[in-house]
Image (cartoon, rainbow, N blue to C red; front, top):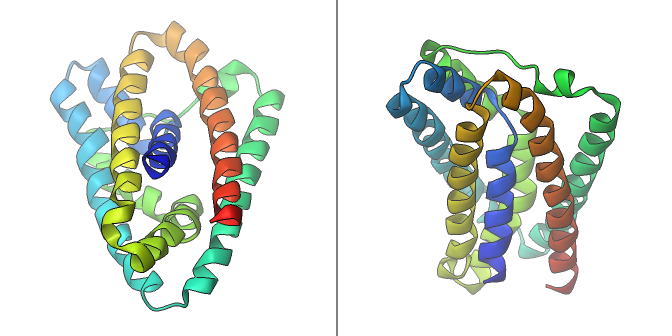
Length: 203
């Protein structure tokens, strides 16, 4: 259950933090194209995560489990540092600055997806957070870590779809609500980082 909660928490954070794919989905919602919006929010991230899961699995099958344990410490510290920096930056920006973001068209889905793959945070997550979980699965059986990834998918898609619907209500709500999403997501990320660090220490 703890792995499911940890995975769901990470998924919710990922779904709440606006990204290029979500901006494309918002543009489609604004035009009444809900089918395309749901497709953009679900299919590209699922394909990307499947590819990154395979890469990470192959990598962590070839390194000693002791190294994976220490990598987990790095993952916890990264999550805490990332959340702390984001919260600090949030204090220095106006709601309008936080809400400002570029809008994309459906034709830019592939570019937005590649941007997600190229983002350093994506690789840091898979190597330092999901990787040690996979290493744990290697030691205790991969069925043991399925709840982490199931929770991640549930949390991500649930949060992404709900937050996109809320942001699509209108420009006024969009501008006032997005800073709150950043705040909620990064406070949650800070708590997850602390729990992940504690899990690495006691596990």
